[in-house]
Structure formats: C-alpha cells, structure tokens
Image 1 (cartoon, rainbow, N blue to C red):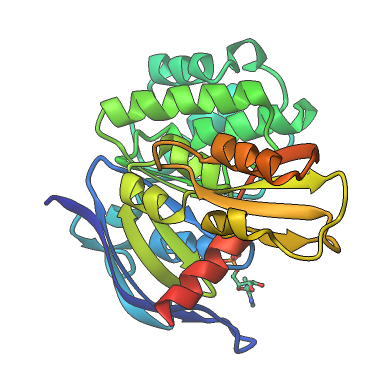
Image 2: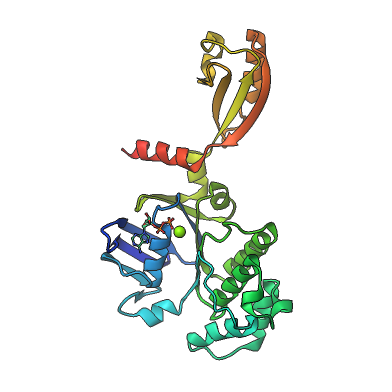
Amino acid sequence: MDIIIKIANLSKIYANGYQALDNVSLDIRRGEILALLGPNGAGKTTLISAICGLVTPSSGTVTVDGFDNIKQYRQSRERIGLVPQELTLPTFDKVWNTVAFSRSLFGKKSNKALIDQLLKDLSLFDKKDNEVRMLSGGMKRRVLIAKALSHEPKILFLDEPTAGVDVNLRKDMWKIINKLREEGVTIILTTHYIEEAEEIADRVGVINDGKLLLVDDKKNLMQKLGKKQCIIELKNAIDRIPETLSDYHLELAQAGKRLVYTYSTVADGTGITALLQAMSSTGLSMKDLQTKQSSLEEIFVNLVEAEA
Ligand SMILES: Nc1ncnc2c1ncn2[C@@H]1O[C@H](COP(=O)(O)OP(=O)(O)O)[C@@H](O)[C@H]1O
Ligand SMILES: [Mg+2]
C-alpha cells in the first residue's frame, strides 16, 4: 500500500488547556478520497491544520510524501493545497491575479494556460478581472479552490467544502474532485454530513471529541452506520405495542401516538410494507408516515456505546 500521509500519535492541547486531538494515528493512501466525518467541535479543522503545518501539535508526527511536516515544512507544504473552512481572501485583488499570486508563493513558474483553465473549470473565467471583494460568497469559495489548486498540489484538503454552498457549486466541486482523482491527486475532505461522505469518499474516518474512532472503506462503514427510521403517526393513541408487531422492535413515542421503526438502508428490503400490512391487520390506522436518515449524532452515540 502506497501511503502519502502518515499521522502518528498526534495530539493537540490548545493554550487554554483544551485537548482538541487525542492520539490520532492514520495512514492516508495515495490517490484516495478520504472523508473525515464528525460533528462540530470534533477536531476536524485542528487535524487538517496540524497536517498542513498551521497548528503545532503537542505531540506526535506527520509525514507528507516522505517529508516531516515541521522539519521539512517547505517540501511538505508545497505538496498540499488547502481550501479552508472560513472565507479568507485579500479583498482588493483581482480574481486572476490572486490565483496566479498563490502559485508564485510556492516558487512555481507562472503558467497562464493553467490559471485560465482553473478559472474555467470553476466557472470563474468571466470574473477574472473582477475584484475579489465584489464577488458573492459562493464565488469567493470558488476563488479559494482555484488558489488551493494553483500550484498543482498532489494532495488537496477541503475543509467543510459544501457547508452553506449552493447546488451549482456543489456540482462543479464534485466534477473537479473527480477530475483530480483521475489525475492521481489525493483528496481529504471534512464534513458533518453523512450523505456527503457516502456520495464521494472511498474511505471514511469518524472523528469525535478529538479521537479517531474508526477508519474504514465506505461500504463497510455504511453497512455499520446506515440506518433509517420510519415514523408512523397513528390515528388513535395506543398504550402498548401489540404483540403481533413484536418482530419489528418498534418504539412507542409521543404519548402513544407515534411508532418509530428503525431499519437498515443496506438490507435487501426495508420491511416497511410488511409492517404496514401487519399494522392494518392488527387494526391500527395510520395518519401519516415519514422516513428519516438516522442523524450523525445518533450514529455517534451508537458508535461510542459500541466502543465502550
Ligand atoms: N485556537 C483554539 N484555542 C482553543 N480551543 C480551540 C482553538 N481552536 C479550536 N478549538 C477547540 O477545539 C475543538 C475542535 O475544534 P475544530 O478542530 O475546529 O473542530 P471541527 O472542525 O471538527 O468543528 C473545539 O472545541 C474548538 O472550540
Ligand atoms: Mg471545522
């Protein structure tokens, strides 16, 4: 296995004493798309910042393509493109210039064709002479992506790339990510949306409370985590779940007015049809029905309980 980033026993305690990373070890494979999945405050941005050399770890080491990310910062950093979570941009610069300038910071020869192509891929080309400060939030995010890619990095980090992003940008982003993966670029993205990890990643790492709980191929993880709930509102409240429905392991909620059925999204059938038939022959009438993906919070609770 060709490992491009090796993270060994990485911990970070911030100056105020808060431990944001707790002994994280992780091998990132060359060419993969890895999603780091975790709720707000889990430590995702801290982890990315520590890999990119922007946050000094309290202990542990990171090697990027064979280079220690602190002792050999320059070699390590030039392999990395980072699209930060926050919109941080020089305001008066023009779009084309700010992207070209990013490239020059890494000592790369100027390359007009490359910058033009990047701006085209990101639907920014007609804005190339606009001042960045005049752009909308979505356009600014596109500029950040172009800047991150301007020096042709082997590794791309995207920190919460689609939080608050419109559908068009999301689509463009997935197109670019696919193109980069075909070119062999390794992509690491953070997200708190399980659907997003599901959509794009080869592997998923689950991070919570500064700890990497597990890393697994997406398929395996979805089998473990992919649960949905079907919520059935009853016409009339009931005191207890009828014996005849015991196979479905239902929960009774909302003072007997609601039945909650949890099923796996990876099983062959959902069992909902059979449940509704069983309900009807038991004489229970349904008022309404909705399904929802189990939330990440619930998944974490399950995971943490399972690990304990
Ligand atoms: N500079 C800092 N000083 C103290 N605590 C911080 C600092 N930066 C982040 N934290 C805390 O560390 C935890 C992890 O933050 P972060 O890595 O941004 O999480 P995520 O990106 O997963 O939302 C949070 O509780 C956050 O408040
Ligand atoms: Mg973050």
